[in-house]
Each structure stands twice: as C-alpha cells, then as structure tokens.
Image 1 (tube, rainbow, N blue to C red):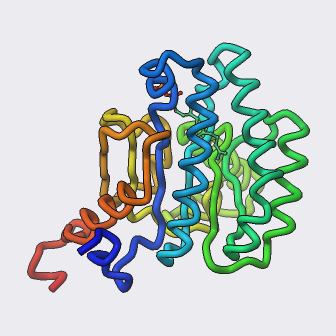
Image 2 (spheres, rainbow, N blue to C red):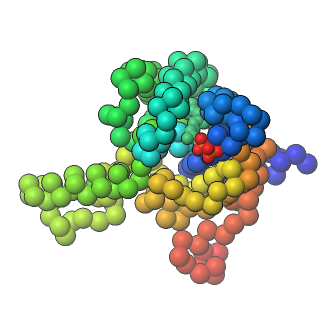
Image 3 (cartoon, helix red, strand yellow):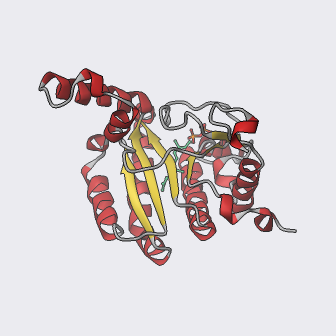
Length: 246
Ligand code: FPP
C-alpha cells in the first residue's frame, strides 16, 4: 500500500505549519552556493503546497523568512527576497488552479516595497479562493508578534477601550497576526534540528511536533504523508486523560 493510501482523510490536520530548514546545508553538501539551496527549496514549497491542497488540508503556514534572517549576509537576504517576488509572480496561476488563498503574517512593513506590492496583489487576486489558506510567515518572529499584542492591548486599556479584567485568551488571539487562523495541529521541522526557534510560540500550545532529518530541498510528498500518518497515530489529549477523550 502506498503511503497516501494510509492517510485517513477524515482526520487531517486542519492547520499544518512547516519550518523549512536545511537549504544552506543541502547546497553545501553539493558544493553549491547557498542561494541554490533556497532556489531548490522553492521547488519543495510548490510540491508541498499542491500536495496539501489535494489532500484537503485547510491551512498551511510556511516559515519563509524570520525576523532574525534579516541579519544574514546582504547577498543572501537579497536572494531570498528575489526568490519570493519571482515565486509570487510565477505561482499565482498555481494558486488559482488549486483554489488556494494567499495570506501573510509578520512585520510586513520591513519588506522591500516590490515584495509588498506583489504580495498584496496575489493576496487580493486569491482572496475568494476557498480550498486552502496558504500563509507565508515573512519577517515573522513570535516574540515580536507577542510584544506587539501587549502594546496594542495596553494602549486599548489606557484609552478605556477594554478593561484589564476583560483580557483573556480570546482577546490575545484576536490581536495576533494569526487572528483568522485556527490553532496549529501539526508542526513539521526539516533538517534534523529539534527546535521551534521563534515560530508561532503561542499558537502551537497543543500542536503535535514532527521532526525529520530530510533537508528542505529534498522534502517530497512522501515525507509529507509520513508526517501526517505519524500525526494520525497520536492521541491528542489537550491536557485531559486518555479516558476522558474516548
Ligand atoms: C532555512 O534554510 C530556510 C530559509 C531561511 C528560507 C526558506 C525559504 C525558501 C524555502 C524559499 C522561498 C520561499 C517561498 C515561500 C517561495 P537555512 O538557510 O537556514 O539552511 P541551513 O540551516 O542549512 O543553513
């Protein structure tokens, strides 16, 4: 039986998030420039996005650029930005064909204006698509996101828009970049690193984690299916006992 046949389509993660790591090491192993690692990483992005939409996953969030990535060498940052604009231009038709809505999270004001323009255009053109929401985390850092939430809510308290007693989890959720997304069910990190780094720290409270040694440019549909099958074998208790959730 092929891997895809082992997937229970009734029990898919509604929100899958991926830390796409290992582009640099993939290139190094092959004696290539890091930029070629990122370029090949975009091929895995395309395969993964299409496979998720075909399976019926409602939300896919990809960590494409972190707040910390700005401190990489300028050449690498420029390459990543160019790849992003190029991919957005090239893949608009893939998004439309697969009925995928594009969304983005992060401190977008830090992005160069050609990226923002392209991003806004693709978001606008795909806004009525309903099969899957693809969220790109760009210039995203969870600590920055949470800091921002604290500032906005403090300001609302100061201006008597809400009272301290009213602050609850739901209010915090409504002020996050991910306000329109469900909690993450499954988080995958490639390349053998067992870290969350600065990704969706609030949103992954009860997520299942899947780590694979595979470097992102080598990540295939089969690796995706493997992660989903592992997820489907787990018992998600959300702090309760096994008996309580049966
Ligand atoms: C991590 O590999 C990957 C990134 C910092 C960027 C991810 C970007 C892409 C896959 C391409 C563009 C994305 C889209 C959505 C079109 P690394 O460079 O940290 O690898 P290393 O740890 O081996 O050095």
